[in-house]
Amino acid sequence: MSLAGATLIAACGGEDANPSQTSRTSTPTTSETEPSVIAGPPTDVVTDLDAPWSIVFAQGAALISERDTGDILEVVGDGTRVVGTARDVAPAGEGGLLGLAVRERDLFVYFTSSGGDNRVVKYPLTGSAGSLGLGEPEDVLVGIPGGRTHNGGRIAFGPDGMLYVTTGDAQNRPNAQDPSSLSGKILRLTPEGTVPADNPTAGSPVWSLGHRNVQGLAWSNDGTMYSVEFGQDAWDELNIIRPGGNYGWPLVEGIGEAVGDSAYIDPVQQWRPDDASPSGMTIAGDTIYVANLKGERLRAIPVAAPSTADELYVNEFGRLRDVTVAPDGSLWFLTNNTDGRGSPGPGDDRIKRVAIG
Image (cartoon, rainbow, N blue to C red; front, top):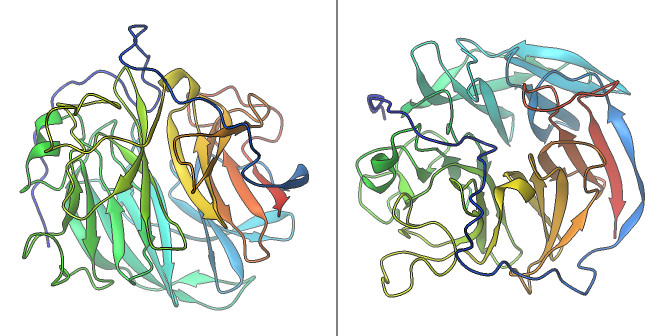
């Protein structure tokens, strides 16, 4: 499926939008209970990464995408090697090589192309851990409108085996409410790129709409789907995603704004962008972990009480882009201080590992 890119118009705010000081509603309080057990201090897995964006595990190895180089790296020991460079990546602003997802021996990548659109491409993985390579790419979805900001970019396979793709509004806000546009949506596709028969609207890949810039997806053990989303100048959001749901952007932003209008779904938690700018997320056991860019912290949110949160490593490692659960059950999180908006320290960027229980 292909959709022509939308005409871009200027919009305020990007991944680190400056929050308004006008309060719209009270923010959730911090949980008084520990939602997870962190067993020891975080340690470095690898260092010296260049604007890394996503971590996934394939064939017993960890793979990392680098936004601006277009390189896909494999972690080998305490270093990395280049598996391959994604073709036709055109980094600019927040665009470039973004999300990764794995299904069997196929690596799915989301990137901004030289044509100006965002697209999902599938590469067969060759070789084995320590010597992985990329085969010939195959388009899965092209024509997602792109821009210097608000490109979405997270891709993940759900428990139903379907491929979920997050897209931003690409600086054209009305498109988030347009069901015929791929902008400002969460999309659901088969691994081959076709529309599943049980999607909310026949023939449409749209799973949910009314999003500004979703960069995190995760599912709890009972199959509930969660996402995190960058707000404009008031609230960043944690949402529970319902098939066909409308999350309001650009008409609604934050808890309480949808009161009196059942067409829009409220977030279950919200944060000021200065304290958040949420990107990658994962669920380990009964805890949702969210990596935050401008907020420079890892949030731990109990699935049983998703309106609460504990804040971990506040201002310790700088900007955090992604977080995932490793095969050994530990938590890996990715710093993002070299993306042009951070303050890199020696060895940045890096993957940190921490044991959890």
